[in-house]
Amino acid sequence: MTLGQWAETWWQGIDVGENTEAFYRSLLTCHILPRWGGELLTALTPSHIRAWLKHLRTRHAEATVTSIRKLLALILADAVDEGLLTRTPVRPERGRRGRLRPRTERAWIDEHQLLQLAGRAAMLATPQQALLLITAAYTGMRWGELAGLHRDNLDLTTGRAHITPTGALHEVNGTLSLGHPKTRASVRTVTLPPFLTALLSTHLKTSTRELVFTTVRGRPLRRSGFQRRIFAPAARGTTHQGQHWPPIEERLTFHGLRHSHKTWLIEDGIPDIAQARRLGHTLQDKMDDTYAHVAPSIETRLLAGLEARWQRSLNTLAPTSHPRASLFLPPAAAS
Figure 1 (cartoon, rainbow, N blue to C red):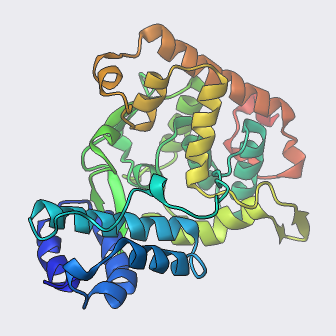
Figure 2 (figure 1 turned 135 degrees about the horizontal axis):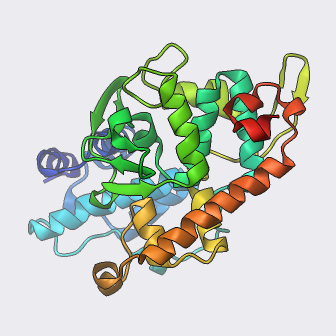
């Protein structure tokens, strides 16, 4: 059996989310099948695959090559389980010889940079887009969880956002749909610091739309459009209405706001289990993940740290540098 023939059979049995399925399909059709689709499974060797991956690294980002390798490893591991191979030719990464490549860490920003970023977003679009960035950084929610957040899933009386099993917005081949968040652990409740509860409450009083965050015209958000028109110029710098904006952090992505949130929690000394529950992660230690819990006092300390961080950022903001920034600040700060 060739790898291409096995891939057709393997594809029928995968059970992943729509986004992951589209991602797998892209890696298969663009990289794996063109090179290995006609090869017999038994003809694949570790040396051939290593040479191929080495060549890919000269043309693609390391993250892309890593994803390709992981998918190929998954396909071949399942071939072993099926009895088509005695062992997989994709060896563990820890055994790969060659040059050590420096680890590239995801860019993140502090609370002062976040408020500056939000101020720019308010000027490029509306205060709603600024509030989206603030909510992302102060909750750690993913893009899809925020873009699909329904107003009914915000409990502003108790200060909680509920990410439900159908509460994430997916974009597959240009089509938007609501579906399951990234993992089972992603279905969760995220507590909100008081300032964010107040900002969201004010926003919802002025909006009748079902989704909390939308485009200026009230349509569901598309990540690529938001990135191109708002996030990239705000983070990487641009010239807006004759005013030059230097970069805040050129490598920052929207997902970097989630990294920022976790970094803030670490800085505030929040335990790993509380971080994991808030971000929708599971701990690697299964015992800790099963038996560890977040005490109310820890949650109180977590929210107090975020509230203090917000107040610190307000003290550094100069509203005159971003005329529309005051629209999404509390009255006291705006004045």
